Amino acid sequence: MTIGHSRSPTRSEQAELWGPGARDWADYNEPMCTPFYTAVLNATEVGPGTRLLDVGCGGGFALLLAAARGATVSGFDATPALVDIARERVPRRP
Image 1 (cartoon, rainbow, N blue to C red):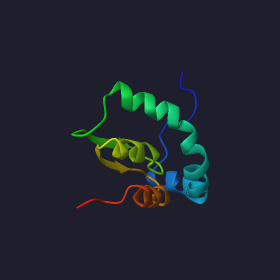
Image 2: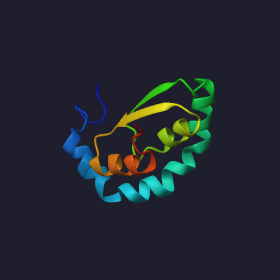
Image 3: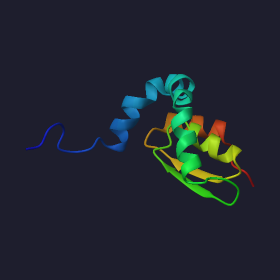
């Protein structure tokens, strides 16, 4: 028995769903996940020398915390508006 959708939303559907509220999500909801992100970063010993790829990075808050620990971070998301916020939070380093 299958419950729910038979397929995952496409990239454009995800962008349509998350795009309009991207800033609100990034500014208000993501910081509430700090204890969770911190626990994961601690458990995986993220720090200097770590290269981290965040698949579905949202607004990049977890990337910001990892970068502050000295990790080299990258991320991608289906929603361009959230990727833009992640780039603001964690600018590329040369």
